Amino acid sequence: MLGRLFFFCFLFLASCGPKAFVRGEYDDVNKTNLLNDKWSETDMQKAVAYLVKSATSHYAIANAKRPPVVMVTRLQNNTGEHINTQSIMDMIRVELMRGGKVAFVDRLAREDVAKEYEYQNSGMVSRETKKDKGGQVGADYIINGRLDTIVQQAGREKTVYYKLTLNLTNLKTNIIVWSDYKQIRKRYKKPLIGL
Image 1: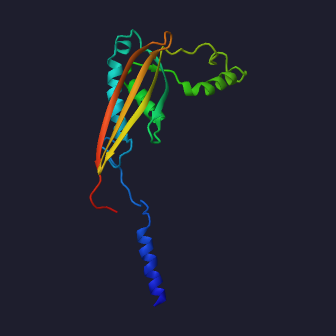
Image 2: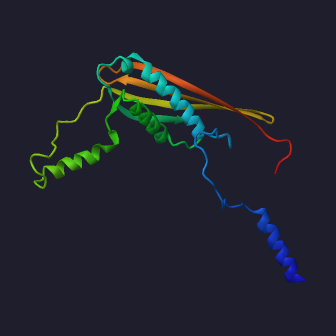
Image 3: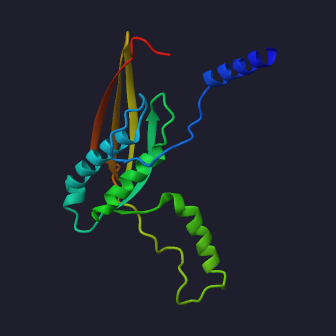
């Protein structure tokens, strides 16, 4: 009797604990994701698509005689969430490159490039194929920005507002030649009864 009681108590406690996700399936990344009230891939896709379209239609890019050389710097996260801002900037860079109107220098690869110069000039690489210092292309512009949020809650209602702002700054003059933002607001409602 005591064994049965222990067994049922164990089953009850096990069923009340957190459940592990054990079965999954692939989903369409372009389908709207409103699973919770946090920054999502849908928010990132909407914001990036709008800002890339705005940037490429601006005269600094649209009327350039050659694709301007751009360096992506950083995106400040002024939200209360842990958001991978590098992923947002990577998506912006990739989408701008897909259009072929912008070229990029790789700020993050500088240390690796410097080490490769050392190796290629160590005598291990043929003179005809080695690369040396002084041949890199300087950036014309930098892209940076900020992600802000405002969260409002009243009773069972909650709204989450995001604003992603980007700037394209002329590296020679330090003048911002293009700036735009994308706003996203999501509305949530708590159920009357829930666990």
